Image 1 (tube, rainbow, N blue to C red):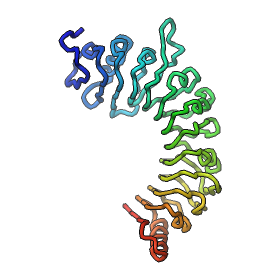
Image 2 (image 1 turned 180 degrees about the vertical axis):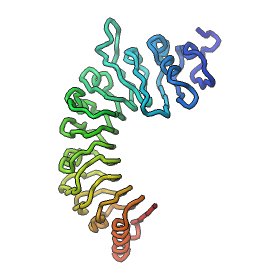
Image 3 (image 1 turned 90 degrees about the horizontal axis):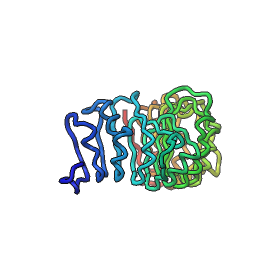
Image 4 (image 1 turned 90 degrees about the vertical axis):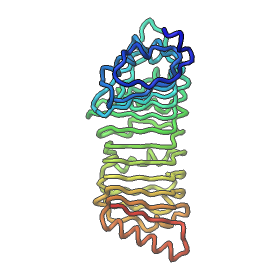
Length: 314
């Protein structure tokens, strides 16, 4: 369409150009957000009439300030084998089986898929994203039929390293994590602490972030032999009161971060005995937690441990 722009690879557009402006077959990167463009423009760019022209596209980035808006990707997304990164707030991924009389392909280069609403993890979807490394999914509504989303198929993503899951009242037993997982972020799931062993048994997990109401209940009793590679643990805004952890439960932990923990009585003193622990970071926690962190630091200093640091933020 633009013979004089044969070397064009990257476009940054201001104002409101027509969707046909980006129908250039050599484009590799498209990025824009709702701060400058309204939702209909975004739909123009990733419509069924536009995507077929973008067969060299590698990165599609759409940042929206409205987390309630969503963009339904057309089935043509499964016809773009060069795609590496899809980052859209918020996106709905089409079922490849809906692409009747069309040629779909395996997106072997796709590494990041962010943020997908109501992700239906069918075998047909998983087989088309075999090398995915990062996945962020969101289930905004209270759901009863979790089996419909077939999240047990996540275990088929053998290259997946990072998974972020935001779901209300999420039954952890309905999901099967891939053993390749290194980072897991959970939010609003309200999972019982007794089910933590499903996560603790992941052999390669290094980062665990438990955001707002990720788990429910007042007591967490870790089990020995789990979290063998965990280096970073964040617990935020959970109703946890009693945490009976010992150094043996997190043998390789380097950073413990607690945020907005109002009810927790204390940090277990033996946490300070973890040989690899470098930092305890507190933000907006109660005085009992702060006092226990200071006491842990004092004990470690008296034992000659100068590497441990404690940071407290209000």
